[in-house]
Length: 80
Image 1 (tube, rainbow, N blue to C red):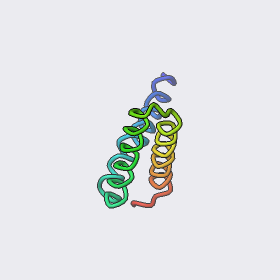
Image 2: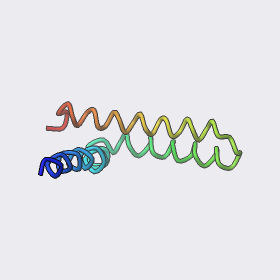
Image 3: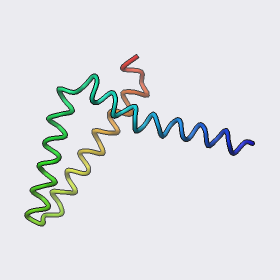
């Protein structure tokens, strides 16, 4: 029974970290999100075409840091 409760908490946190950040990024911060995502997509495309793994890795790290920033904003209650 205890395992079910922990699973429920972890699934709720996983949902908040994925769907919540996506909703906040698109609903509230779309003027920032659209250019950031466009820039990251261009970096990945150019990195794939030129076979520069460091450029694709840099884009991945930028996306990860943006995503963690969104989760941090949500957990701090910035959109309440």
